[in-house]
Amino acid sequence: MSDTYDPPQDPLVILHDDHEVVLVDKPAGLLSVPGKGEHLCDCLIARVQAAYPTALLVHRLDRDTSGVMIFALTPHAQRHLGLQFEKRQTSKTYVARVWGQVAEAKGTVDLPLCVDWPNRPRQMVDHENGRAAVTDWRRLKRGETETRMRLTPKTGRSHQLRVHMLALGHPILGDPFYATGAARDYPRLMLHSEALSFRHPDGGLHTKVTSKAPF
Image (cartoon, rainbow, N blue to C red; front, side, top):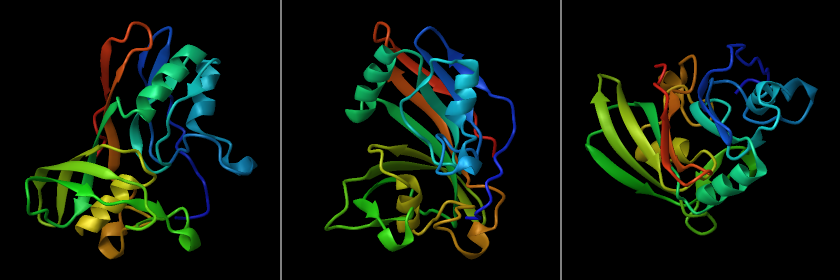
């Protein structure tokens, strides 16, 4: 990953907003929260707070990942949603383009992950020290050199989908950390948060917000 941070300047895309939450379509290449240093202060939460001053963080997406992200607009909503994420009561699905032809129609990756300290922020499979990480996957479409997949993480570990696809032998295209050679030679990480399902903080109604993958 290059050291230069040049986030896209696209206008904020609002997928849903009401008195408790706002869901936005995060562009690839934009940090969810500020990094260390003045040059890393442009981030999605800052842009959301410019339009919704009370917006509070609930979860994050990797800088290189695009798609649905939810922010709370009240402390009550932040607590309510935070508990849902913690107890795995939310459901997220992603679309990914991965390297090579995936043979099976669907499957599950159950491999514990931990940070690869000398190479952080890279993560790695570690059966002794890793934390449980589970991803369900389904093949959508197979091409000559790549496969389109739908990924449903059952846990929320850092870089989980990226490391699990690498472990399958099919790294996500354009991944600056885990793809090599031709698989890396893409303009962006081909990973998009397509849908988020949650219980609304006001009344508990099941709510699902989606965003079409731009690739």
